[in-house]
Length: 279
Image 1 (spheres, rainbow, N blue to C red):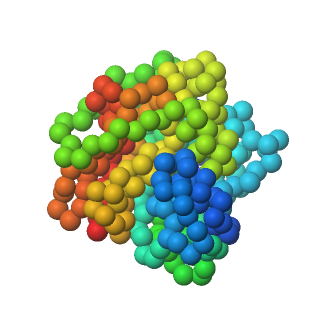
Image 2 (cartoon, rainbow, N blue to C red):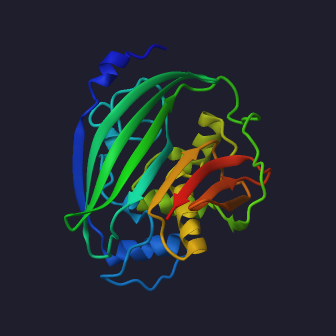
């Protein structure tokens, strides 16, 4: 397969904006999903990364691809590779978002890059987001999206690195199929790898349902805030390998200068996501 990178580069600079009211019911559903304090009210500071559940694309069902993703070629460029995943990103927290705020997202395509990976051709899209709460800039986000070809073999990856140090803070996480379904609903994410087990196993070759990248990032960001007693001012993360609902998962952290280094790992000690939080 070939990628016309010059054509895809014409999407650089393309912009999109959306707004949505953060009501108390979404905040309560988010709290229930992540087992946070369910007593929330208008005016309170919203939970970390709840903005990822807002201003989501509302594409008609008939316009979704076979994998449940919206078709490409409007805001995101029409990369001709079939698999799309969130590869990483960063958040700079500038001001809190409160329940009851109108949250607006201004998005810009920053870069399109073609690379040759170990398993084949890859294409990375970098998207910058500015998130406003009632007109004030609340956070700046970078989103890295990766597109890749269909692998020739099973999705099992024996080359995934193992964690190499002992965490000073550790917590178990439970990626049940119900949790993944709830998070897909919160984020209006139709990607079938998160809730359709037959599609995951028979079509995609995964051993189970795939845990969302943003869900893992939310786990780790909330874990960091719990450890230090306040939310970080900067949080960045990178996906290493998929986690599945069949995995035993741990959240891990160690002190590192002015912040924490964090990671998720499966029951075999293989890394899934790494992160860094700063205060």
